[in-house]
Length: 157
Image: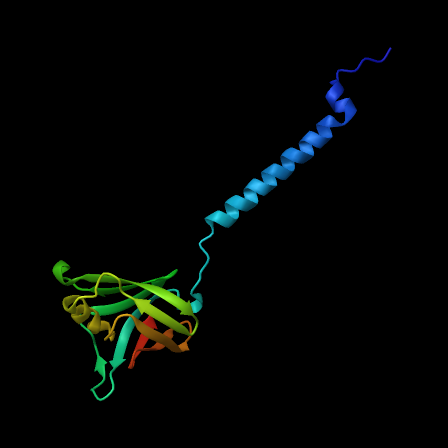
């Protein structure tokens, strides 16, 4: 006599269908989770921190050797302007929304629109708000961009 301990659901094939549906649901949930957690790099090669090496304004002498040091930090659709100094009171951070696509972008500083805020942002070669930015040259070590009428040269930091 042959005895079986297999439940009737397995013998009938329902178990196989249930396993297939559960596997499909697990795969679907994993795919949705992976897509939702990705922070894709939307700005391409410019997505980095760049130290300002020079600012060229039309009709003015080339500005170099900045103290405190000035930085452009592009991350997702945000630009953060920072400066570093040993004096914590002279450190600064200014944020802009970035729209557009390589090589042409628009920078909009929503919180620094008064004359005082604009006077601070001018240190980075930004003389108006919002302002257009065009990437003129970009590789892994160097960024040259035109912001308004000014040309800013940076090195990757």
